[in-house]
Image (tube, rainbow, N blue to C red; front, side, top):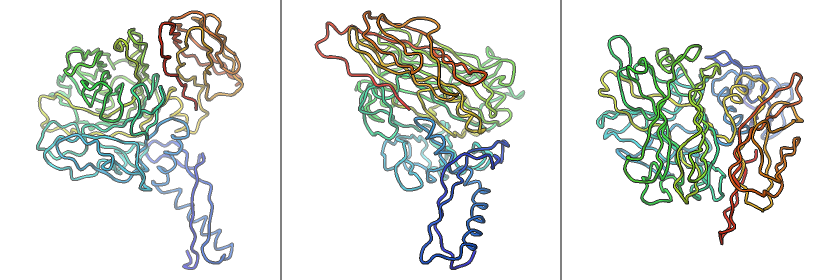
Length: 506
């Protein structure tokens, strides 16, 4: 390029099909529109055109360019997204402890604060490598960009490759509204019905095995935790609750043993009250084994393959065991297997009302020995939303039409008070036709089958479950359905009205 041609070139996000993923052979969205702003005087257009074309060619072939833009793609389609690609290389500064200091957290490439709020590191020896970085093509999903490395070693003298926990607060000052960049909020802020999704990859020698390659029994391995009722990243509303877990929380863990054919078992652990000890922490185990493409977690570990976890969780109603939990596993092509459906989830303490507003990866494990193990693993492409994530994510990744998706949960209604809310629909082809196929709305509430508006004045209190079906205008038509539970409360004996609910709207 000629020395006198000095230009500032910015590349903006759009979708094309011109770049192949260097590992998986798939196309991904990439920035393509170009604007050139010249300094000093304007140079001949022929030189400018050649320079711009050359620059675009170089940019489009580089791994950094493949990663750049994917963050914006996810942010434009989901509430909360983190690819780690647009964060500065980073590792923590605290040794042997938990760090909630925002000034110690990762920064974006432009120097602004990221959404991350905490980590812990329990070794006496300082880490010598960055935890967020380009860890190599085999440790970065999509083969380019950056990922987060965690390390769940329990050896307090070992030099660890990452934190054992890493998380964020996503509360706000409004009930049922999530904000990943808020530093504080109310106990009932955050999500009351949400999904989260992320990719993970384990080394083949991450879990203990016997001489035949079978997993050796271990009782738990904490994969991630999501918590309710926090006022900020470290303060639950109930002072008696633990700062990492809060008044109620759910742990997703793995375990193994002879009862499970030495494959990995997904374990769902939940606390039903805010006592300080673990006496109220209950666990249920769900096999991940089975036939077909997703034959169990062991397959991904044996082959050093990426897989994705998606979890759907609702809060449920206070005093009732009606919280919903659903869990899916995906392989790198988007093939999915459902692991768990639970509709009788944990009970919120009587008189309390709070939402999910804290999440962290990792935790600890109870391996008998760590000899010969690599206790680190990597995380990539973390997403939270009020609608299903996996189908939309893989459609974006493969440059395919977005699926028909129904969102989100409905705010509560109050007996004999005006109610208005809208069931949102994304993907497919508008206009849509909506109908209730099972269950019903409370008396005097009406669904508009075109707009999704539910309006009226409810004349009966209680819980009203129903199933909504949506049909789009594609030929042939796409169909989607989703279960809802509308709660109508009777506040006739209350002197102070309940705080308003708010539906998350895209």
